[in-house]
Length: 466
Picture 1 (cartoon, rainbow, N blue to C red):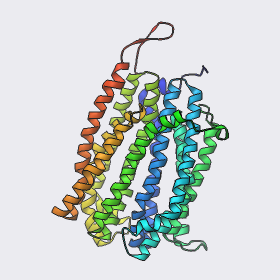
Picture 2: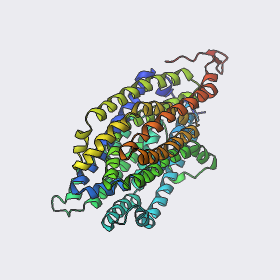
Picture 3: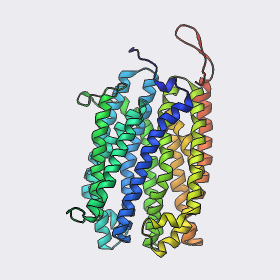
Picture 4: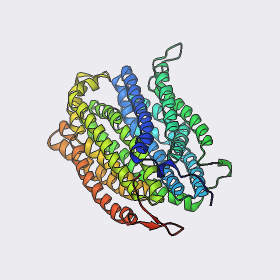
C-alpha cells in the first residue's frame, strides 16, 4: 500500500480545521449568492416581466444544478472515505469516474435544452413574450452547461482532499466574470447590442466556462488525487458507490425543482407579481443559505475522512462546531429578513404590489431559517457515511408532503399571505425527521467506533478528538 503523510483532516485540531476548510467555501458561495442577486437586479431593470421570466426559469436551472451537485457530492463522499482508508488508487478512480459522469450529465441536459424548453414554459402562461424570454434564457443555460458540470465536479474533488482555497478562487472568478459581463450584455454597453434576459444567460455560461478552466488547472496540480481522464473507464462498483450518496442528493435537490414548479403554479393564480416575489426570495435567501451549504461542503470530507479512519470523536466535534456556526448565521439572516424586508425588495426595482406582497412573504418564510440550518448540519453526517438516503427522504417529505399541500390549503383558507407560512410548517417537521435519522446514524455508525481498538502492532489506539 502506498505510504503518505496523514492528511490534515485526520490530525489538525477540529475547530481550526473546520473553519479553515469551510470559510473559503462559504466566502465563494457568498460571492455566488451575490452574483445571483446582482443578476436579478440587472434583469429587473429591464422589466418586471423579465424578472418573472428568470424566476420561472429557476426550477429548470435548479434541476441542472441538482444533478451536477448531487453527483459531485457522491464523488466527494467516496473520495474522502477512500483517502481516509488509505486506498489511493480507488480514490483516483472515484475522481475519474465522477468527471465522466459529469460529462454524460451535460449531454443529457443539452439535448433537453434543444427539445423541451418551449413546451415546458407554455404550461405556465399563454403570454408569448414571457414564454419567448423564458425559452431563450433557459435554452442557452442548458445547451452550454458543460462548464458548470465539469467545474462543480472538479471543485468537489479538491474539497475532498482538504483543498478549499482553490475552489474558492474558482467560484469567485466565475461569479466576478458574470457580474462584469451582465450589464454589458443585458443593456448593450460599449457598442454591444442590448440583449435583455438573453444577455444574462450568455454572461452566465461564459462565467461557468471561466470557472471550469481554472478548476481543471487546479485539479491537475492536486497532489492527493491524480486523474488521467483519457485512461479512465466507468467502473460499475465505483459508479454504484458514487450514486449511493449522489442519487439521493440529486433527488433531494430535484424535489426542490418540483416544489418550485408547483408552488409557482399556486402563486400565479394570485398574480404574476407573487411569482416574481417568490423568485426574489430565492435569490435573497441564497445569501443566507449559501454559507450554510458551504459549511456543509466543508464538513462532509472531514466527517467522511474520519469515518473512514475510524476517528468518531473528531466527527462529533466537527458536528458541534458546525452547529454553533450554522445557528449563528441563520439567526443573523432571520433578523435581517424580519427587520428590513422592504429595503431588500427595493433592490429589485419593486413595484408597490411587489412591496406589499414581499413585506409579508420575507418575514414569514424567514421564521424557518434556524431549524433549516440545524437540519443541513446534521444532514452532512448522512452524506459523509454513505447514508444519503436519509437526506433524500427528509427532503421529499418536507417539500412534497408538507410544503405543497400546506401552501395550497393556506392559500384557499387564508389567501396569498398564508401561503408563505407553509415553509415554516414544513421545516418544523423536517427538523424532527432529521433528528430521528441522526439518532439512528449515531447509534449504528458512530457510537460503535467509540471503543478503543488495537492497531496493526497490537497497541491500543485511543479515539482522541484532536
